[in-house]
Image (spheres, rainbow, N blue to C red):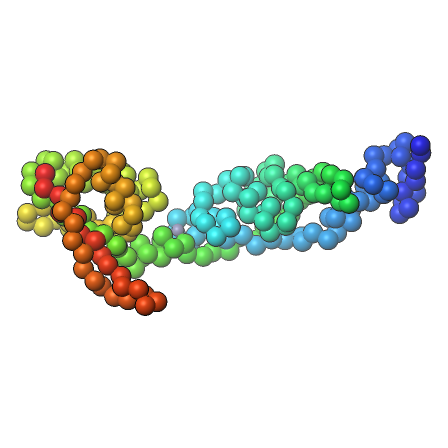
Length: 210
Ligand SMILES: [Zn+2]
Ligand SMILES: [Zn+2]
């Protein structure tokens, strides 16, 4: 049965329909209600972008995830640059699926991610104290840094002291994961260094004899 679009008068023989309106009129209306510009954030130091509150490498996938959340429509990114992004948008209109292309302007703004903020302020939760054989200490230092960086944490500082190295780590959970992964059993101790929301904050010390 041939139907006509109530808005533009085109027939269902000329153009596909979504429900009782033609494809063109439906997508035009959706596009008109979409913002022309979206603001996205990158960290000024590590250049990763904010994706739903987490920082990820800038990519089509990251941008698509963030824009899907901002636009409340499923979005894939065909291409993008500093100023704009070309998108494939999929959404549902009265139970019918509508798919269309949409170009959106991007405004990139800067923030500082928690990790960079902590790096800047010298934040650390754990100290690994390496003692013993100088050569083994150097090797262990290398392993620690690799593991910590690969697991979303960082080495705040390395202190070369006479009897070995003190390695400051931003995340005690990652420090513990390192010992588990390398099957190491350091001697543990704790110091109380403050309170946060009524909870005592501890710094963990791990003494490793090599
Ligand atoms: Zn129409
Ligand atoms: Zn950062």
